[in-house]
Amino acid sequence: MVETIQWTEAGVVMIDQRALPRQEIYVACRDYREVAEAIRAMVIRGAPAIGVAAAMGVALGVAQAYSARLDEEFEEICSTLAGTRPTAVNLFWAIDRMRRVYRSVRERPLEQIRARLVEEAQLMKREDVEVNRAMGRHGATLVPDGKTVLTHCNAGALATAGYGTALGVIRAAVEIGKKIDVFADETRPFLQGARLTAWELQQDGIPTTVITDNMAGHFLRSGRIGCVIVGADRIAANGDVANKIGTYGVAVLAKESGVPFYVAAPVSTLDLSLASGDQIPIEQRNPAEVTQLAGVPITPDGVGVENPAFDVTPHRYVAAIITERGVAIPPYTESLRRLAQARAAV
Ligand code: MRU
Image 1 (tube, helix red, strand yellow):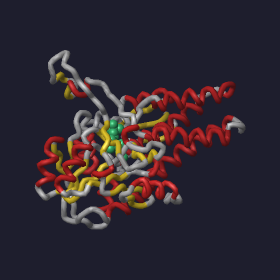
Image 2 (cartoon, helix red, strand yellow):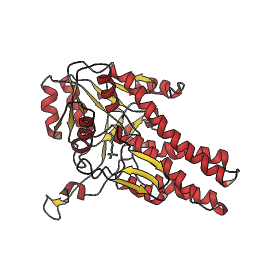
Image 3 (cartoon, rainbow, N blue to C red):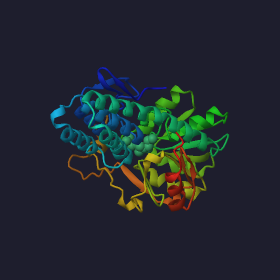
């Protein structure tokens, strides 16, 4: 399975997801500012992956910081990384976790502080893979045998430290012997489905078909799709789910077609401080992502453009939320709170 991100002597190394699937290029971020820029520019993307990247960015920042004003520098590092992308709560969860570790060791000698932060960031990477495998085990039973699974965006190994959330459930279903194939929405405008989901599932030998986003309704009506599984960037207390733009439309079409719509996400994606999805900040990205295809302009110059990177799917469309601690079903206000309070599975 592909290594999305690694802590190395040369810095934090990431596979450049902008270049896939045509080129496998690895980028080394040599300081925390380069890690922040890699997250912002989507060299690395996907909620859990950017959480791990931010944790490694904090560790790298402290490894290069001066002891005289360490507290101040620590906060600068955290706020630079936190300012990269607003929607995925895993970014802020990871930075908070690193901040708690820092506070618990800040009186110690600098070398010990640095070593402890590197250790925590690496632990978060390992834990993420285990969390995804646990999610896979819980979710695999929900996947109908002999049918097609529809997914949107990329919630796979590339979007995490490995194995994936939605694609982790698909991988786990295949591992227990279910005969399934996958339809990957291309996911305009960044094409995470066409480029990344198709690439990583093809590498695993899982039969995958790319469809354009506007074909989803057609196939959902056809009876061929057994379920939809997507990842999430932030889930509010009532079960409303922020995920890649276009997810909401797929969820409504799935409900209309009687196809269950599942969300697979770790507990670190829950934001129970928000009562509903209306409070989730939605990232607005560069209009050029919409007006150009592979750098070639496709719209008239000067035309108005909107580019929200995420949308919110109201909880009434979500049949279940698969986490590493178990599967939450409606009413989510209760089931998600119970899962958040349950003992960590990993
Ligand atoms: O803009 P991106 O590519 O970071 O958005 C990614 C998604 O929306 C994923 O579906 C989500 O982060 C879950 S990844 C396991």
